[in-house]
Amino acid sequence: PSTDANFDNGTFVVDVSTDRVGIGSTAPAEILSVVSASAATRGMLEIKNTGDNAAWVVSDAVLTGAGSGIGGIRQYWNGTEVTRMATHTGPDTTNKDDGELAFYTRASGAAIGQRMVIDPSGLVGIGTTAPASLLDVRGTVQVGVDGTGYDVKFFGDSGNSSYMEWDASADELEIRGP
Image (tube, rainbow, N blue to C red; front, side):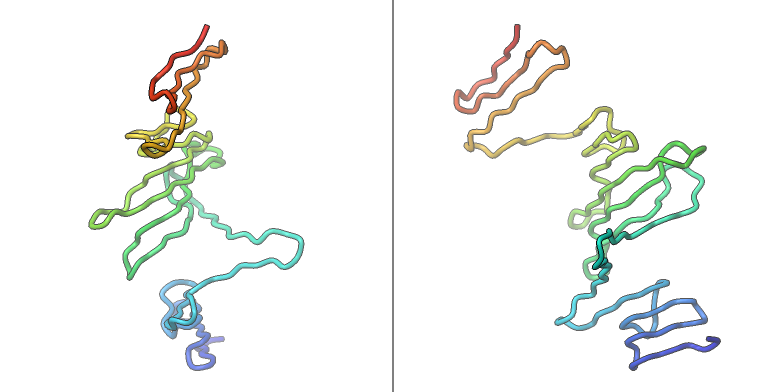
């Protein structure tokens, strides 16, 4: 149509001047805006397949550079972004067939920041955007809670069954091996 469409007093709106659709909004801010002003109704988008198949949300962006944002999910609290899950392009800008998954959070009064990443090769980084091993944690790691009795074992890659263990029952660090 060449004119706007407004159904049921703003329940469903098509704004042809901006090519935007609003559900629950007479002034959609994005291509598709779903808005709920009722405390009894959650502002929720449901994608459901009742057949024998998956329901997908697809992001496909034409990008040229490494580290560019492909898509994701952002969560806001009263207009302030507090968490984000994002996919970024990987370093292979020739084939454009790699990517990473990044997780962001915001502490009170701080800027949102990337806290964890799974890079294109499957390496997981916590506290780093460039993990150097299968699990790369930059910072203090706590396993268990004081007084709960958890043992922690660290194995080497020598294949000779050597390991280092914190034995909670004995309250000591042991080094075992041939």
